[in-house]
Structure formats: C-alpha cells, structure tokens
Amino acid sequence: MLPAKEDIHVREFYDISMEGQIHRLDLPVPRGSKIFPTLGWLVVVSDMNADMFMLHPFSRRTIKLPSPISLNEQLLENGDTWLPFFLKAVLSADPCLSSDWVLMIIYEIAKLAFVRNGDKAWTGIDPPHLNFLDIYYYERKFYGVSCQGIIVACDVQGPNPTAGHVISRLPTSLKALGGSMFYLAEWCGKLVVIHRSINVPSIPKSFRIFEIDFAQGNWVEVTHLGNKAILLGFNPSITVDALEFRKCKPNCVYFTDDTHEGRVDPDGRDMGIYNMVDRNVEPHFVEESCSIIPRWLQPRYEGYTL
Image (cartoon, rainbow, N blue to C red; front, top):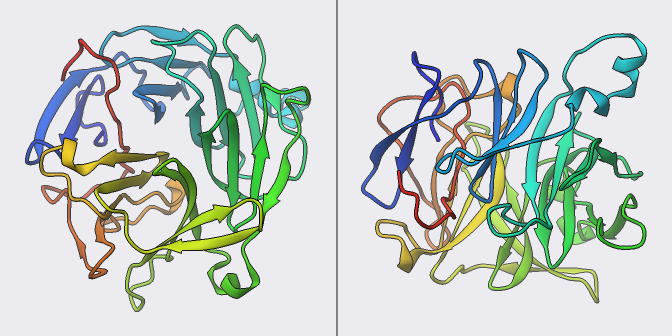
C-alpha cells in the first residue's frame, strides 16, 4: 500500500505478483490517519478525533476499537488528548472468519497492549518493558522481540493474560547483532527471528534468519528459505510460497523502509528484495521515491478483488 496522494481517500496498491501493476481503491479513512495492516485488515488511528477502528478494505466492514487515548494514563491525568506513538498492530485471527480474535499493539515503543472482540478498553501487558520492534502471533501466543534480541511470550488467552515472560535472549555468540532491527516471522511452521542490518551507506545491506530452539535456548541460523519469501516492514511479517505468486521471487526477503516515521529515509531508498543466496539487493518499487512508509497488505478475503 503506497502513501496517500492528493485524493486522500484513494489509495494505491503496488502488486508484486502482477508485474508491478498499480491498483486503486477508495478507502473511507480520515486525513492524517496512521494505518497498520494485519491479516488483510487495516488498523486505522485517526489524528483528527482520536478514533481507532479496523477496516476491511474490500468488504468495507469496520470494527470500532476502544479509544487509544486510554493507553496513556499520564496524558489522561494531565487532561491532554495526545495520541500515543504506535509502531505495529497484529491480529490473532481474521475477524471475517472468526469472532474469537485478539488485537495486540506496540505503543510508545516499550509497551504492549491488547483488546479482545467486544472489549471496551485496552489491557496492558505487565513488565518487562523493553524497546519492542516487532510482535507476531504464533501457536496461540503473541511474541515480541526487542532491539536487543530479547523475546517475550504473551498468552493472552491463558490464565494470566497480562503477563509477559522472557523466553529467549540473543546468544552471546551473536551479541554483535544487538541494537539493530529484529523481526519475528513463521517459516515452515517454525518461529524465526530475522536480523536486519542498520541502514548505513558504508555497510552492505544484510539479513540473517534464525530458528529459535526453545528447549535449548539456541538460535540456529537459516541460510536458505526454499520456495518461501518473507515480506518485512511496518506490518506483521508475511511469509508466502513464491511458487503460488507470479513474479514473486523465492528465497528472498522483501523489505520496506520501516524506521520510525520521524526518521524515514527521505529518498525512500531503503526498500528492495534481498537474495539469500548471493546477498544482492534489487528494487521492487522504482516508479517514484516514497518519503512516507509503504505497508505490505496480503488480501485474505475470498470474493473480493482489487
């Protein structure tokens, strides 16, 4: 999903499986809204009225969410109505297919909160407070990873839904990777951690992928994704079988510039396709630069097309 242009309600979608075809879709989203895709839905946070809702872009179905202002108790105490900073949003299930869904968010970088279907308020996750970079839903639990490679598990459907437990840490042998970008994804039924080198002109772009051995606490490096491709950005990681999507390259990592929105590369150049074999990077969107972060969206609702 590309940045908004003059017509704020019409958004453009760059289709990587259709030779870069551009689709246009009218979305009823207020001006200045922040948008976070997850499972084919758009989590929308409006700066105009502090409203928050989920929008299905094809069926136009909306689900109202509790006000995000309630997430920041200090702002409420001061009588302010500023919105907290949001980083990512992740659904546990597609609301088109199940009413038993949970939405988790990263906000103010260090904090996690969730809302279940029907909840009237957000529920915060207890410490540890870490600088979370990514969250992912895997085998009925939410997982978060910090900038130091610390992984936390949250069982929001269990007996202690507000607890976060550290289950793995960056191994000592990989300490040099600390302080960089980390992501979580599912690959071949396994939870993996993806390390992305910081965007420094003098250092080649690189990605390293590790399978988490929960029993031993080890991180086992994955050097080949097979026919899979992983899409990273300002959205939950998406893993696809490249053989099912025309023009999608296997054994590659598709990435967008997902640094914090106040520090986005002004030329939008930190985007591309990373080949796990030769470690080269090629562009996936070259028509224009993007000074605002694009998002990946994977349509998941049969019967609706762009």
